[in-house]
Image 1 (cartoon, one colour):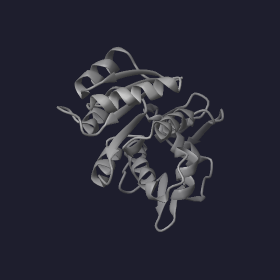
Image 2 (tube, rainbow, N blue to C red):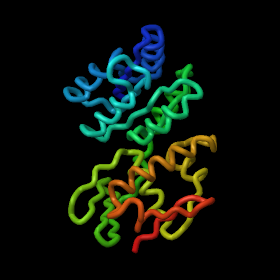
Image 3 (cartoon, one colour):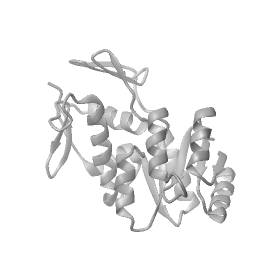
Length: 224
């Protein structure tokens, strides 16, 4: 059972998802606005946030950005069908996954459970790559002695890359290993997450020294 923060301004959709997720065993707190959601995050930390992109006032993407400043909790966006720009902007803002509306509750439940499973398989170990230290037991990453705050999905992706040093991992493999997805069109999840990790661990994100792009194939973790 997960403590879910659900933000959806359509009353019928919100009520339907709240009921369906509750029946799946989750504890759901639902709001209609981003402002209410942010206040909830500040006072009572949920385990995961489900945000509709199109919200009155502060939209879902901006809510995601503000949550990221407060907490690395997982975020799933609900997007309208075909709104690729919303998806890309949302992923760049730090979202861990997205589900296209109209939402099938069983699909959303599966995505929620997949996000929350991502850290369970991390094996205990402490790895050092120059200034970069990855403690797989404590699930912590530090750079030059300063802790780097990664979201669960970012950490899961980094750990997957680190498990295969020097090996090129294609997007399809990473999508399946980290997100439990099989649809190749969702490969932008991988690209956006890599960009966010680079922004946090690379001295110069545009000229990475840890996570390298192998054009036409995927990504390789090759520390100096």
